Amino acid sequence: MTHGGPVVEAVDLTKVFRSGPVWKAAVQQVNLHIDAGETLGLVGESGSGKSTLGRLLTRLLKPEKGEVRWEGERIRHLRGRGLRFARRRIQMVFQDASASLNPRMIAGAAVAEGIRIHRRVTAGEAHLLAERLLERVGLDRSFFSRFPAELSGGQAQRVAIARALSVEPKFMVLDEPFSALDPVTSAEVLNLLLSLQAETGIAFLFITHDLGLLGHLADRIAVMLRGRVVETASADVLFRSPEHEYTRLLLDSVPGQNRLETGTLMVRQDL
Image 1 (cartoon, rainbow, N blue to C red):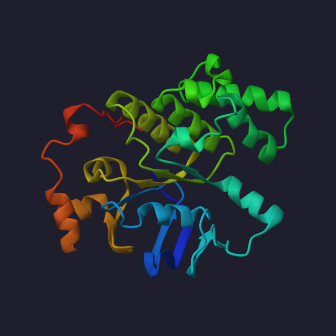
Image 2 (image 1 turned 45 degrees about the vertical axis):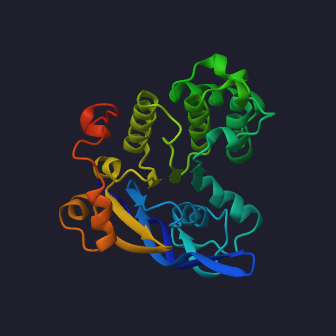
């Protein structure tokens, strides 16, 4: 796929948290960009700062230093209507989809809410569009009226993806989206995302521990270690000739036959 200009940019991004008397930099001077239609994979051990970086890029967290730009626009000082319009373009799907859904809101209402707020349609139109989105992610109309507690992990993840897609975003952060899913459901959800990217040109930041998966999925891969991005390269280059020692250690941990190659997670190659 031919990529457009940057949808999201991080410039010298730093985020610090306090734990008792100790301050720790979860993200340190990170610089990266993600282009339209591109999938950037973000990999690193637990606690390396991957999820924090994802939340910074979606403005769910604010940095101590540096800035995030959405389509060239600095987002730190966005307020009101400007922030609401910007949030329509940038969405995040969390690792625990069930926890990210309002337990008192049925699935259809969760999807319709964003449509009604951001796309300014009637309640009836929002309902119809929400049904269509649920069907698009593989959930029939019966799921519209189900509460999160009535959904499996895979179904909740599909609802979360439909909710994110409801506002027609240009960029989506996917934080370990398959960690709670079985291999068959993982493959179905992944193929859905790849199809949507081919249709719409949406850009993805794909956060995962699975470097083998990123070798098949990502255009480029960024490697995080202790809050810093220590290496960024195309997937082919990174697998063939990694530069950083930590990247080489990660590659050494990838089985010779990863999930994609054994067929337990089948990714479509025709997209």
